[in-house]
Image (cartoon, rainbow, N blue to C red; front, top):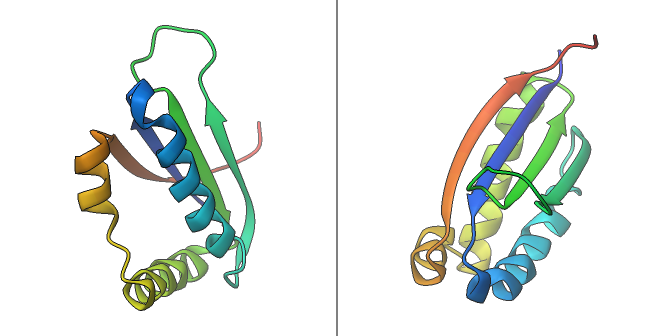
Length: 104
């Protein structure tokens, strides 16, 4: 069964451009990882949610999802990239969730 990672973000307007630049860097790597099926980035254009960005990544299986987590951690370490201080500096709030999806 596929596993879907969904991240919701609150990004202040003044942090938008840098947030998107960093997100694209991370997403560029994520889509190269074995077991990656598809991913999308969403920017809210209307509605009442306080979250204005959302990303999704679909993985072939739980094993692929677990492997991706290790691969991303290793790549961040190799690049010297730590998203937490970046989020703090940009005042970005994130909620990360894992889902299993089924068609309806």
